[in-house]
Image (cartoon, rainbow, N blue to C red; front, top):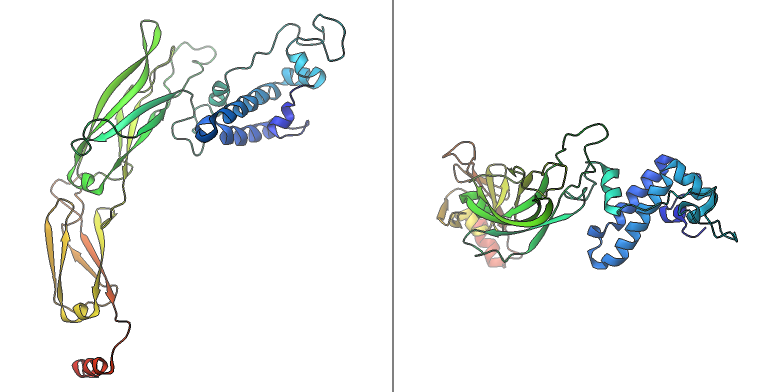
Length: 342
């Protein structure tokens, strides 16, 4: 029979349409070249085989020809063992099977629904961009990221209206300091555009004005800045704010949380704690009360700016961990008892 499409899709010969879909979904996701950057050639070959197998077996007419005559029947060739040099009249009748591009099969299968684990990848060709923070990194020499644009199969039967693909999304990692003070981020994009009847590469620098207090997940949309294809509208380009971990502070909504460890003697006798704020100020906190383990001190208006309420900020919450000595000498034990009245 030549190529065994059933074996490629890991299904038996009596597989239903639903069985074929489940198997194709699983294998296509596993072997998509963008998921196998380390061994791209093997992945591309397997991905192509999987797509070809699904295209044949999911079509009742092609599947019937394949089941009876094998791959040769699909190609309009004489059946194996035949000494006749002409095409079999029982075969494809000259309507040869030419497999489509594997990415087209993949895009049509998911038809606008992003597969789990793929970010803006359910439609074909890639679009690359570079991201740099204004002033901090200098220039545009940072690590590249990938956009995935969406390749439409057309406006559908009976319609001439061009379709607009789903938006293309990419993350914009920001430090907590940048989200506290605000910053301008330069995004260098390269995309495919339709000019004078042909597709050409176009480069552009987009500026994102990150506002003080923006949160992880904030979206900034640049309409029609995605890849272009013939007979379709360009996709929108959407940048999604992401937050990098901070060494000292953690963000909880509009509040900032910091953990501070102090020795037992400071917890009992009082001390001063110094913190460097996200905008570079020195914040001095005096502790005069006894600090118990797990005690939380709330300092109003020293948290993150509230984006929708100009001039307002959340709270700074300092949680204290009290360090106890591992051991005491008899003299120290006696002194502690005298001091605490035990």
